[in-house]
Image (tube, rainbow, N blue to C red):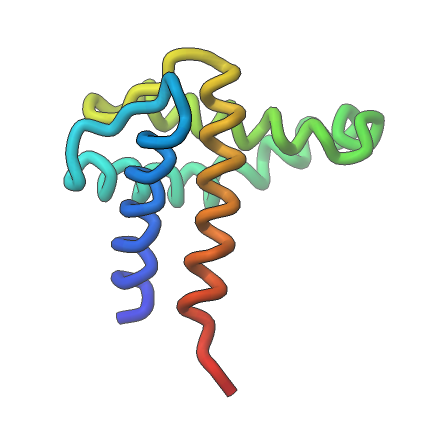
Amino acid sequence: MNFLIRWLFLAGALLIVAHLVPGVSVTSFVSALIAAAVLGLFNTLLRPLLVVLTLPVTVLTLGLFLFVINALLFWAAASVLDGFVVQGFGSALLGSLAYSLLGLAVDALLKPRR
């Protein structure tokens, strides 16, 4: 159940990112749901592989290359979907940063209280 609520909140976060970041657009809430699912799959399946493959560059840049990986995955998700558009790398970088920050907020909101 918590998974579904998190997914709904992340779709809402993607709509907020589309409203705040120029160059990022989402046509509907259904598109945001699909995009949030695709972003989750990309981050689960592709991100670890990319982090391992680019480890020397990541070490040389003191971890800043991870922002590039996040932006590329954000951009790749938009290129696969119809209702989710990112118009350039700069928009992908800003959009991925905003989406990550909103994702942290969603996780903090849904964290069980002790």
